[in-house]
Image: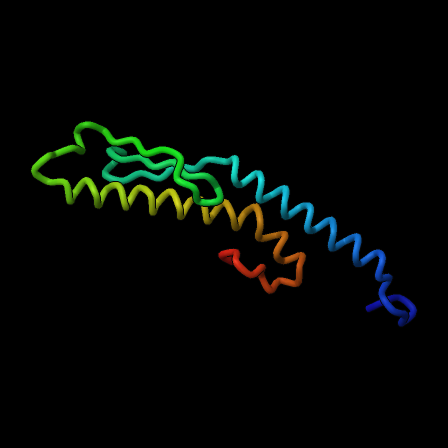
Amino acid sequence: MIPGGGQPNMQQLLQQAQKMQQDLAKAQEELARTEVDGQAGGGLVRATVTGSGELRALKIDPKAVDPEDTETLADLIIAAVHAANENAQTLQQEKLGPLAQGLGGGGIPGLPF
C-alpha cells in the first residue's frame, strides 16, 4: 500500500533497484573470491572451487593412486568436485538468496535459485 493512495515515487524505486543491483554485483564478486572445498574417499581427493563454481585446485593423496585402477581415482575426483560445487551452491544461496528475494522473490534468471 502506498500512503495516501498516490503513485510510487519512481525516483525512489529506481534508487532502490540500483542499490540492489550494486549489492548483487558486490556479492557476486565476493563469491568469485571465496573458495570452498569438497572431498571424497575420506579426504584422499580434495577439490577447491570458488563460490561461483570455478575449479581452483585438486589434491590427490598418493594412496589414492593405483595404476591398475584408474577408474576408482576418476570416480573420487568427480565426487570431490561435485561435493565442492554443492558447497559453492550453498554459499551462492546464502549470499544471493536474500538479494533475489528483494527483487520480488521470483529469482534471477541464470542463477540457481
